[in-house]
Length: 154
Ligand code: 4NP
Image (cartoon, rainbow, N blue to C red; front, side):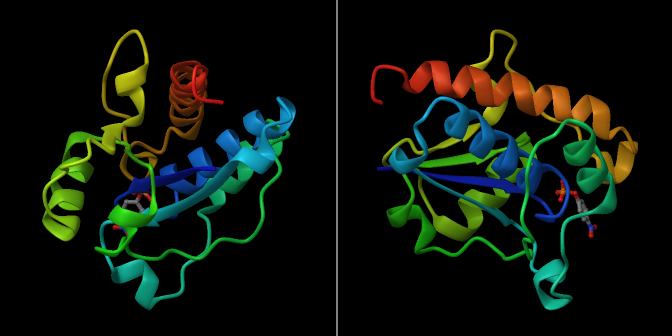
């Protein structure tokens, strides 16, 4: 079982999008029983509001025929570091914030999702850009590259 936690700032736009895009990819490859997939935030404010998935993320997932369930934002916990095999962030500031919550990445579990792609880079936050299409295609590229990286393992 490979346990993957996608992480962004608020856990309502990018990381739930990555969670459900990746879930669909592994389902399509018949690999669902080999993965546990979830997402979390670095900030706690949306957890306090019990915030669901942003409508922009819902809209693009629906348009792209990516199935999703309800998901409520939660903040990453120090114990997530031991539990998950991969903690996949969207940008550099997420990496910094995750480090301040879970401590040193002694097992090399924390990466940016697009570090697995040919052109490693941040995934911009659509909360600020309003561009959920761009986020979606970056996430597809990252999830695809990450699965290719895992190919030897699964
Ligand atoms: P996300 O985007 O990190 O991709 O979920 C954001 C969602 C909410 C906020 C910021 C970014 N916020 O300030 O509430």
